[in-house]
Length: 105
Image 1 (cartoon, rainbow, N blue to C red):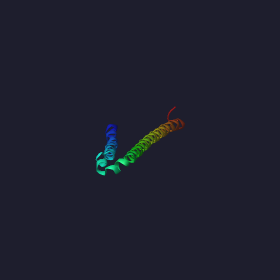
Image 2: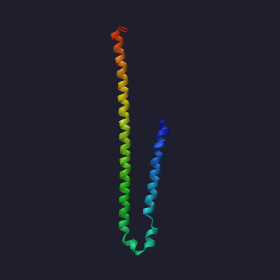
Image 3: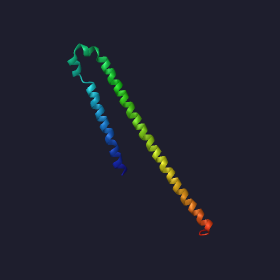
Image 4: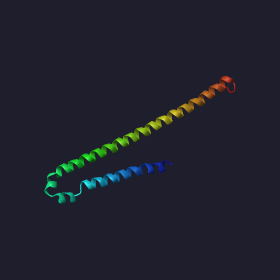
């Protein structure tokens, strides 16, 4: 079941990755410079700076998303361990109760 879950969790990530590649390829399209002529040549540096800023922001969003996912998984594991400890404690209390009632020595 975990293998199916891993595949499903990779699909949105891959979709986001391919979408960002399309977005970046549109930013670096060379036909824009030929259409705008001299004006595009003077603003070429600002266009590449904008693309770099967009790339940095996208990487930051992905990093925050992965960090959040990691923290969520850590929280789930901690909750599961707490529930397991509570279950073990419940069974220990039952053993003590049986000894107190004289059902078991």
